[in-house]
Length: 313
Image (cartoon, rainbow, N blue to C red; front, side, top):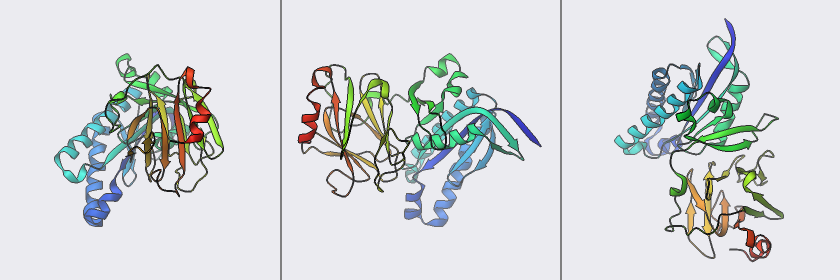
């Protein structure tokens, strides 16, 4: 039987399973991943959703309303965290979740439609442990639930002509994002950020956030290098600072200042400050990997930024 109705579609993707196969072997790793995905499916049932299908190391589900979808996403993160606290082998596994709402076509227990496609593509824009949703999902939440989401503004989604306004569930990371270099000294509020890769020299103001760095032609800052993922990293404005989140398989690396230590973001995030370089797919010291120079701009620094960047970090 075919039905057409409004649904909230959820995709969840379990990251880190590749490492399990390397350390545990195929049989044990397959059993653990299957068990974990089944556990996540319990969160769908608990929140009155329909488990549409499992996808190897992930799943797809649908809900009648956004509130139940968000509750299920939060419950999934809780269940995975509890499992990782009980078992060391689960500590390097993380969950990415994306939700979209719209009209879907239901045929023989499966779902099709724009909301399905958007939710699946949004996983490319989610970091480990992140839940990203469309504006349509946020609009259907209670006031208390909406307060937990931070706008990422409009992002180009692969396969869709119009940009999609998305939000991320704020898990209190904010200024606590790791830098490994102690407390960041806050200057006057930044006005923007300059990025330079080869001849691609661009300045982004706060209204341009978020910035997606990637190989895709739909990325905000397109870097045409085979070591760069389609959506490799994302720069957000979090109210008082810029945050860089790795979205890739090969990793994102940041070096602050001249000859400073290099921070590996492997699906993590950090706060950007001052000036430095971002290595995509390899550390800045790797001459093969593309590196992007960045500088946080303030009003008084805007005019001298090009000279600073030409000298390099």
